[in-house]
Length: 336
Ligand code: BYC
Image (cartoon, rainbow, N blue to C red; front, side, top):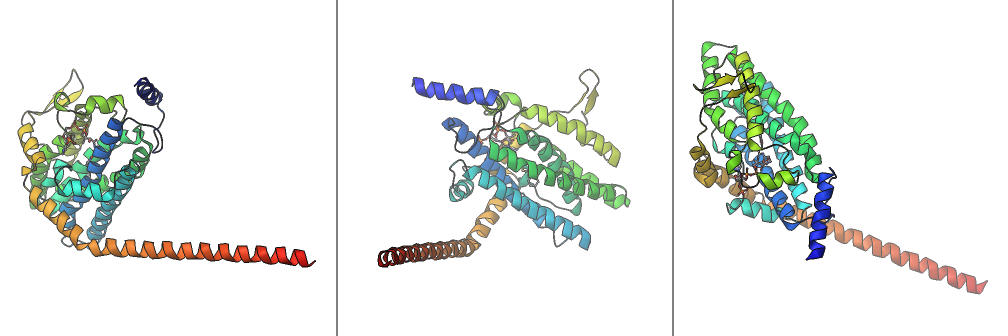
């Protein structure tokens, strides 16, 4: 008991001292569990996030837009891979994590349960959702767990390219024909509030924040990051000449921040609980694609097994050859 307390105190002292925790270091079970939960849910979000955008690859308005979107969607798949790998360093297997997603025991971001109805939605996702992702993820580069923090460095670089491609689409539409501008406004109307909600429940309803902040997994609270996003996005909307769909939005001189109207937390809770516009479709698609890809996983495993057997044979052959050479030398030595 005293030993466990001692380990825990030393662990917290390392965190307080801004040291990175690495996979082989001792860590409390709850720290490991929290990280597996957050990192795997983050990975699921990246991969499920490929769905709304993926449907627009064939419908993007030009070859240039298609290739850019294709790369972006591919990047999201890559982010999923870095993140699953980071979670694996904590002892979670990929199969367990996917089973938790399919069994609806693991969540993914609420934002991806909304449909991408028009091309302008691809602009709004890149602008708003990727901005929110960057604001949330930049502090995660300083997360106390080394593999997660390092994965975030590359992810953030790619996200910032994604954000710019989204804003670039919005600029084109907002400065285009009246119909195009209306399309951009409609996308902003539908993506604004879900993006504001992406940062998670308000601080007083956030179950994990206090502990995750003490462990320096999180560096800022959900509300602090949400505020940063709002302040930035409202100014960007002004540049686009678009209106944020919030009649109560106002600048608060005293605090130097924008104040929004009430956020619909009932809607957020409903979507997180599985009852958003696309929850069922997203999970069904993931299950089907996972099932369709079973043969690829089997082929990869069979190839890895074959390679390992070949390598073992090679090692055995070299060992035998070495032994034979040794005994030849010994008998030659005797003859001399
Ligand atoms: N949606 O105590 P809290 C991306 C859950 S990827 C659904 O505050 P925490 C992108 C939360 O999990 C975007 N559920 O939790 C990809 C918890 O439930 P559990 C994803 C949510 O972990 C492709 C409960 O509510 N980003 O941007 O301290 C293309 C209580 O919440 C949500 C990440 O995952 C939500 N929005 O803080 C483009 C970043 N919010 O787990 C873009 C890493 C909360 O107890 N994650 N919940 O069942 C984090 O930073 C934190 O996990 C969160 C939540 C800020 C999201």
